[in-house]
Image (cartoon, rainbow, N blue to C red):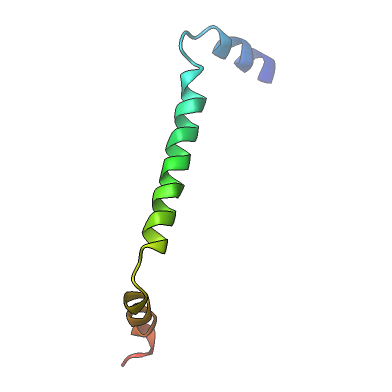
Amino acid sequence: MFEQIKHNMENIAGIAIFPILSLVIFFAFFVGLAIWVFGYKKDKIEEMSQIPLND
């Protein structure tokens, strides 16, 4: 079954761009997420960590 899918995919023109595009989107998302997480201010993280403890 996989051989049929592989054969059909090989016949589609320009199909090679999709794995590359997927990798770029995946990589850009996680790099952006890492920048966002490490760019957070320490006092804001401390403030958010106290929210569940406040009444």
